[in-house]
Length: 290
Image (cartoon, rainbow, N blue to C red):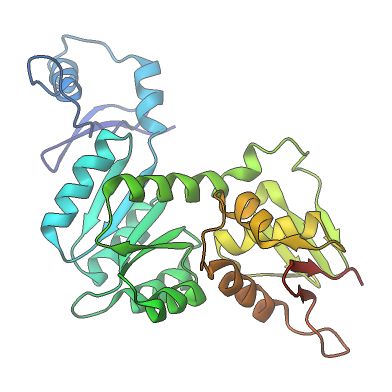
């Protein structure tokens, strides 16, 4: 249970002590009036009682944190994301972004690589030290180095700038969908998956190796879960992308390879010196059954 509070023009107006509702819709009715703000005004003045279904709808809005020093781009993305059903917070530098991650616990972070002061890679490293929150990197077009480095540091995906808001929304929804996959899978996710020394609890998004928790990113967990469900079988990159990342594999996309490399590093080697995740040339990957 939490407070019903309304955020208007950067201020917080407490209404009651039951739920929290953030009214951040940018939709307009036929008269050009923002209906959510009109609703807030009526609630605040006592003219209208709160509709719990309305509250539930707003509480379910995924919260995205935008970290970018380009203020014009932030405003553009904020308007588009809010119109598409997201609750949006923003920060114009890395330090403010890190503080927002800790204080607001966003569902997903959009992080620009090139920022003054502390850059995106440094911010990502510090985020990963304290949180598994999904992170989408904004990288310079054609800069493979930033893309690969970001994925290696724990980013879940990337989009090249300049990007269209529509592409960004599609990527965000794909990441959120796969990070919440455990709650909607048809398999009984309460039953752990055990492969040798590896144990995975899909519903808890938790993995242990020899009794010790593995520090996996959301994307690494999703890919490892797919491999574990098909342990001893070769899983194609296309299948890994569709089941683990939530979208078809793009041509020249190396993100699967980079994420699998990260999982391998956290696994370590088998007694014979080989990796527990084997590459099957021109086919995919296989989680070895000991």
